[in-house]
Structures are given as structure tokens and as C-alpha cells.
Image (tube, rainbow, N blue to C red):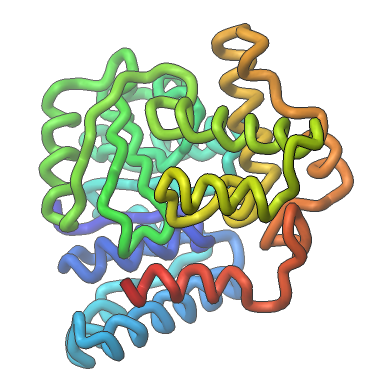
Length: 296
């Protein structure tokens, strides 16, 4: 496996492209607009500069990494000659199904199709293609170049060969892959999102304030970030989407999203991305959070 296409130049997509390129892969970064691609490359460059400043990589390493990335606004151009496609588009089932249906039509049958989805069924995504045995989940954690975990999700039809290859590829990226089966929320978000939701319910019921809840979890449970701050960082719309997947998938009231979360999303209070969530976010808050990870 030498060439990889990454669909989506946003937070996760540019991080995935960065990680593959730094590990020596040729990367085609694909997005609908050149402006999004330029922003993604700027983010990669900034993060590489932080790594150079920390003496984790050299200036030559940085330049080689950037040289391994090409950008495309047309999917059919970006996937030419690739061995693997990693989709990192918006966490929306209709968008993902459309992308994978298109990918199965414009790539050779041997190309592996992976999704960075954090909650949507890999089996369902695979069913939209002509090769469900070659569809798999690669759920990276944010920020991708720093976080070690990759949650590898097998769909119902995903083959052993593809699973083993993606596990080994993840290790070559310097990651620790963990194989899980395809159930709502997988492992990471099946555990994390109900915790975040419960923190929001705790706030809604007046048990404690935002900073108090986060402080308890940081100091008492050794979490690097409180659940409400983390929700702002992830995006409250994304949190709501995942909770809905859990609720619909299991039909259990314990997964019902907090009414406060629903109202905040309807009001456009999405966290860092909108400038306001459980905290007021000044310009650059997300950059400060990411920079803090790169300092460690």
C-alpha cells in the first residue's frame, strides 16, 4: 500500500492526511473547494511547524511530508492509482452513503474503502458499495497526528484479509489499532457520549455548574479535559448526532439525548466551531486546545 486518498480536508481529514504523509505515503487530499484544501494544508503546515519547534521532526521531514500531499477538488481525479480511500466527510449518513456509492463506481474493485465515521454503521456503508468485503472503519482520534488510537471497525461483510491489512497499516502509522465489531457507537463513543450526555443532564438539573462539573472530572477522574469542554471541542451537533445513532440503534431510553443538548444545537450553540457552547470561545480557542496536545 503506497498511495492513499483522503476525502475531506477538515479537522479530521487534514489530520489523517498529515499522518499518512508523515509516514511516507503518497496522499491525495480531496475536498469540494480549493479554499477548504488550502485551509487544510495551512493547518498541516502549522502542526508540522509545532513538531519542528519541539524537535520531534526536522525541517527536512516537514518539507518531505508536505511534498507527499497533493490536493484535488474532483474525487475522480484524486482517487486515480490509490490503494486505500479514507473518507472523513461530515458525520451525516446520507452524505457518507452517497460518497461510498460514488467511490465504488470510480475506483477499481481491489481498492479498500475506509470511513472515519465515529458512529455510523460500517455494514450500512458497505451495503451502498459493490465491495462490502473491502469496506472498513478507521476511526481516528483528534488531533490525529498525536493521538495513538485507531478504532478499527469490521462491518458484517468485512473480510479478514482487509481487516488484517488495515490493522498493519495503522501500526505503520505509529498508531495502536483496536479491532471492534459494528454496533452503534462502536466502543469509543458508546462509552464517551453517554458520559458527556450525563454531564449535560447534570448541568440541566442544576446539580452543579459547567466549570464545577468539568473540574470534578478533571481532578477526580484524571480526565485531561472536562466532559463539557470536550463536548464543545467535538461540536455539540456531532454529540447530538451520535446520541441519536445510539438511541435509534438500541432503542433504550438511557441513550436519549438531553433536552438541553437538543435546544443548544437548535439555537446554533455548537461549541468552539460557532464561538459559543457551554463556554464562550474567543477566536483561536480550538487552536489553543490543539496546540496544547502538540506540546505534550
